[in-house]
Length: 280
Length: 259
Image 1 (cartoon, rainbow over the protein chains, first blue to last red):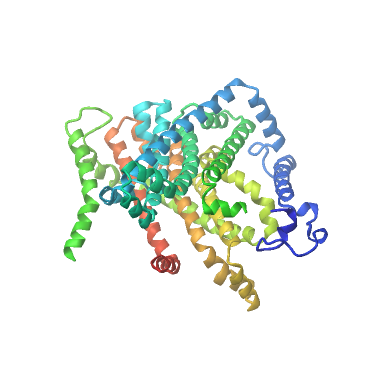
Image 2: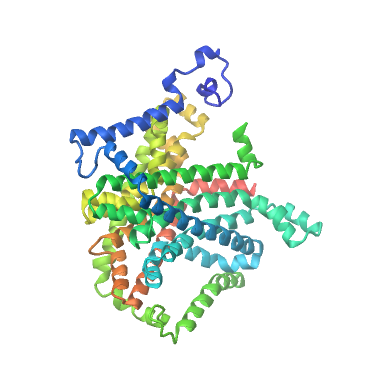
């Protein structure tokens, strides 16, 4: 959408001449976003300096940025970031594959679906963090302890989405495929998968976020190496600006992940009407 | 009719019974310290939780969750409605909200601990802060996508702002808000548990992790079971509330699907 058409609520091009319809420079969404971000950082810097909030608890944004710069020059920080990303990546990948395979299997066999429904409904809301004591007992502060949490939490996100996706398959399409005598695997590939894909991608996005949350949780509570662990250490060691710098890194990581997941979703589904409509 | 119901019940309970049966029989003669027999776990459930810990640990945890969650839902809806109603406000705040939402909520625990120590205030603040984002952002999205015709109709009838909000905007945004509240509930349970595991003197999460540290393994297992049960029960209660609040919406959807 160009800046000219921004004013009209229904998104159709404005009939007014462009010279009048062009919003002033500060009214473009981009600019306002920058104003918001800049204002936020400025407030975060000024309020502690003026003593409105206690500097000891919330250091000025400048101090946080300085601590972030200092962190970025240490090798330890990058190792921690790598640990977090590795734990997240492994857990997420395992959950994704397991969720899709189990989901397609259960979803395309009605009997299995019926039998497992109550169990899935029951297991899904069990908070994964309840497993923390067991994970610590079995694996100590090892990478695997956190991995259990990450996989358990994100697996259900994927599975539930895949199941509703498979259920959404058009009966006529499925019966047509059966009439043509397509093999089971071909049906999965050409009928079930395309229908389920939008749901799978929703599950992908949700699972990516949940996996990051649980990865950081595991590091913070269990003490598995990674960013979460360092946040806890910085806090207990009284390095407050460093702690905030790490929190900012965690936030940027999350925001970046959201953006990547959204882009992946748009790319994988570029043939799908819901995405195509957005582009035109 | 009875046969249909009986079949349904059978299908629903078959797999759970088989799974529990497998767990029971595999661990029955288990001498592994970490995997005690299920019979032993179940028999230590009542003595562990119903002799004092119910009031000293379970209730405080649930109260903290309820208060924090309540604050988050009310605050999230209020702020979300305000932000969603004014386009300029929304555009200015959007990147900040996106960022704050992306911060994994558990890292709030050490941050809020600085201000509030390790008492009830800290836990309630952590839960409220963590739960507020899904509610807030979904409310913004819901309020923003209210049907233009509905909104204009309200304006033509010169509804007062308050009436318009209560009769048009909030009901139209309700399905989205409820979806956000559901996400927030599971985040709230996570935060309730881990804020107690991180630093606390009582509570479900604290007690369970304490059992693990003292190698009271069957008791630890009962804690895990109890947390699981609480998660399942809260999800069920949420579904009941959702069915009430969104009765009109679910009805419309059902008829649309049939038609």
